[in-house]
Amino acid sequence: MKINILTFQFAKNYGAILQAHALSSYIKNDLHEECEIIQYWPKHSDASWKVYLRGFEPKVILRNIFVFFNIKFKREFKAKNRIMQKAISELLPLTEQRYTRESIFMNPPIADAYICGSDQVWNFLKCFDDPTYFFDFTKPMKNVKRIGYAPSIADPWPESRWEEFKGYLSNMDSISVREKSDVAIVEKLSGKPVTHVIDPVFLKTKEYWDGLSQDMNINEPYIFCYFLGTNDLAVNLVNKVKQLTGYKIVHLNLNARDRFNSDYNLRAVSPQQFIGLIKNAAYVCTNSFHCSAFSILFRKNYFVAPKGFANARMESLQEIFGLNNRIFAQEMIDGMATEWMTVDYSKADEKFAPFERKSKQYLNNALYGEAN
Image (cartoon, rainbow, N blue to C red; front, side, top):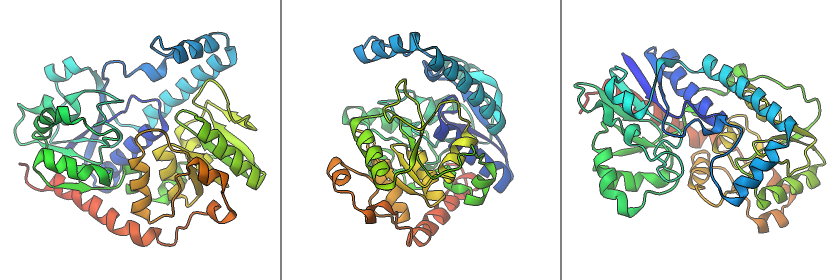
């Protein structure tokens, strides 16, 4: 069977690359099927590779001015681009052809089954408002399977567009979602059963990721910090954990400034080193879903400083593993006690096992059952 995956393979983002690697590796090496990831580039999807941000908001303008005069930042940015491009070529089995919205209709990649997901491919508000991720380009094809594996909506679809999404979902043969909170609305709009499944990184074992990881030789206990945008809550959380432990701060910094005054301020890091930084950390502070996911895989003590949106995925992740609350509001940070520093993993294996079985069974049924 030839299987094509449609995901955010273009993103200069650790979670995006590693979840795409996980799903393609599971299909190729565990299910023993032929698999490629479609090199699909929506409009403006190359933004993360450009040193200057698009837009004229005051915050963007100030950031771009800061970057213009910061030679070190630009040098590190280019170095990270090279590292991430190399990792994508090594970790992802990409189609040779690169597609746009127009070209994928004119000359679509041919497969027996198409899988969209995981990542936020159905987040039409803050990612890409693009029906390609519902395989509308495959409508003329006969006897192919159109499968959603753990796509994330993150920001709820507005009710004013529900009829539109009904049309998109009608094209799908099998549907699953990554967040439990999305099951009800997708079932309502699709009229089909929707399965709550695990993110692809959990389809591969801890031992697999351990073998893929690379150490950065930081030979002292440290707090690993990784934030997709740093707000005051994140700064307060990191400072509190440092105050309670006395450990050094290792910051994988995606922003122009380092608001943590880090002992190690890192930028040019590979996905393999990203895994290693989590694996070897004493504590992890983040607002990233996949940083949280790898923290759980390696049974780390981690803390989440939530963003102002799309936090259902963190709550769903905690529920899957039966964890004590790791999402810290300001009042929790102010009163943080020693017992809150430790994640209770005592129920993790028992809670996770049925989700793992259900997720793998869903994928097997979607691929090897009858197409609708």
